[in-house]
Image 1 (cartoon, helix red, strand yellow):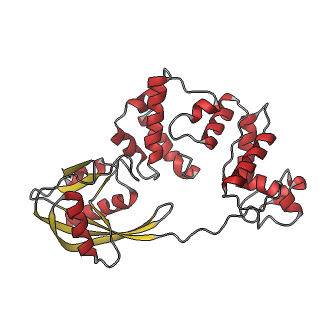
Image 2 (tube, one colour):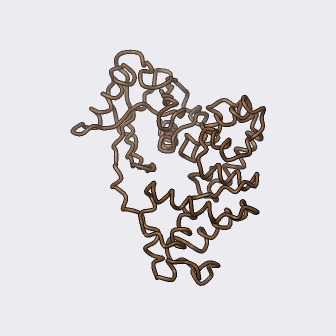
Image 3 (cartoon, one colour):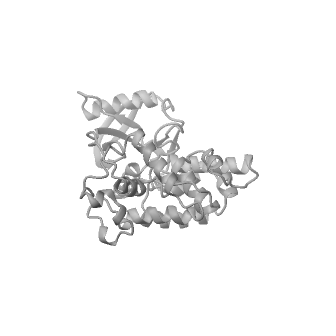
Length: 322
């Protein structure tokens, strides 16, 4: 959970998740939809899928025993160099140095590395320096100390250098470069996509939702069918095209229900939701794993991406007013 989520945000999710899945066996045996529902709101849903896949590997291939070396830990799905080093050092005492954003900041300032820390070459250099510095006798304590130093003292701006225990040895401090180190090249402009989705209801008042493919972004979550507005398209034109491509049906777009702005890690969207009526054909899952017609009161039972979850709340309020 802490790979992409702040501690204060993760804590309540952690407690709920571990109550529902108290051990590796229960997580391995759980239905995928239950895992994603428990994760709903944390984002980066591949983390939840990978964690369950890793739990299944531990149960099915390792007799339920979690591996205790960095190399074997890293072999589990979803675990990279940072997480494997953290687990191996803190839980098992292996001298594996962790390198996260806090550690990068500490080491780059300490050694005066002024080059772009986001490049592969500089990241490798910092990892090598971290490996040299680690205390082999207390690797877990050392790793946590360096991460804490970066989080509380060697902060991105206005670091508290006078309270820093290593400031006398810090190149950036001694050369007045703490504001310019670490250096990261300016980020590219974040693209902003216009997304249209259709709220389709059948004669019994049920709503149509679609299950995203497992191997796609937000895989395993449910959504209202629709897609991206192409250049030169009007919203209603784009929605009717998308529903025909995804569901194989002809539709008529009605009133706009709402629009929701949402930011992902590498792009932003504005989600435009319209009431839609199917005029010809029966919906088929041409672009999704599955389609379902559900009652409005069942929306809370399905895991949705955050933008779609906001939409379900607005939709339920709208339907209750009819």
